[in-house]
Image (cartoon, rainbow, N blue to C red; front, side, top):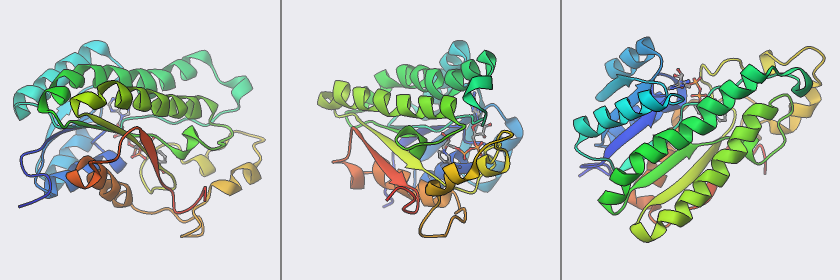
Length: 250
Ligand SMILES: NC(=O)c1ccc[n+]([C@@H]2O[C@H](COP(=O)([O-])OP(=O)(O)OC[C@H]3O[C@@H](n4cnc5c(N)ncnc54)[C@H](O)[C@@H]3O)[C@@H](O)[C@H]2O)c1
């Protein structure tokens, strides 16, 4: 008997990085998993690596969300776990961040979270023990200069997740934010390598993992924590954030 036998899971941004690692981990623990991404090639690779059903979709589009959530529900026959993982990151000086960049980051990271969660909630509530795990960031709680748009969405992720946790707790639903940092993924651009001109790198020094001396770690470090939270092992955890940052913010 595996921890996720009989559990049905939807993961957004499952074509790469943390989302792929989560999809593969939960599938390996017995879950039926659907992974969604804007990137069909990434999804093909995820499906090649594990028993994951894939759907192309865009979390920032209301019609796309409606289509892929309903396809996922048809495929799975219901939903027990939603992993909101898809996000984009762009580093920039706040004073020169174009409005369309700000709008895009909000649309994917925050409006996307709302759209997918809203569409999935009726099915998650119906199971009586649904779980929403959202991949936030330490940027939601701790200072991340040159990432003000991204950080604003991640603060919003936490507030949204706590509200959902309280609102649906009586229906058995749990909602938790995971705050990773320093994970080795394709998330472009890698902040340290793509800081805007004139940025002070020392302002980011406090954000390095103590356990690894700043070295990045594989995405399965996050996937294992998501698996714990989404399983019955995490059944008394809700309305909170869990940092997975190697002590960067200890
Ligand atoms: N890598 C890190 O160190 C780190 C640190 C803190 C937080 N995070 C968070 O972890 C999550 C995953 O990040 P990652 O590092 O794996 O990034 P990544 O860029 O490797 O993967 C993100 C995936 O989301 C997909 N995606 C982007 N926009 C989408 C959209 N509109 N609809 C559907 N899919 C979309 C991408 O195609 C990609 O496959 C994000 O929420 C990110 O903010 C990562």
